[in-house]
Amino acid sequence: MERPIEVLVVDDQPRARRSLKALLATWGKVGGVREASDGIEALREMEKTCPDLVVMDVTMPGMDGLTAARAIKSRWPKTRIVMLSMYPEYADEALSAGADAFVTKGEPPAQLLERLAAVAAGM
Image (cartoon, rainbow, N blue to C red; front, side, top):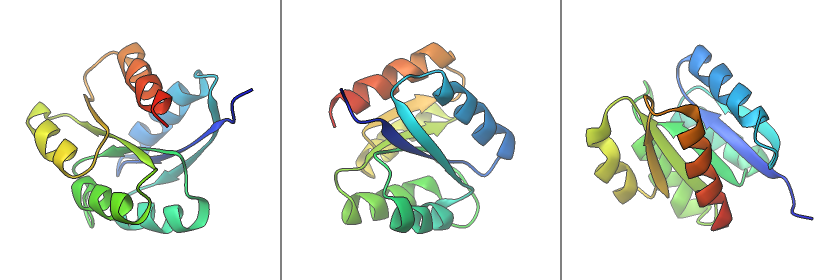
């Protein structure tokens, strides 16, 4: 049996974090979900828990998701990152920053879960 996937959800909007956590709870592969409200908090949480998968917003106050993705990939290269944004024009920059996938926030939840499963399959 596969080991459950530990996930870190990073978004400055509490409602978005709750929605992502609820969606992740429907995916049977998830063992636990932690939260962070910006890139700085995400790095602190990485130090404590080193999750397998990070689902992170691109634009946040403090440290944005692009900067955090670069820092995470440099220190924890095996951690997979899926970047989220309302703005599809961030896709190339997110992938250049080290994200393993990019999803716009307007996509259906099932599509996000499919993308997460594809990224997790590569772990």
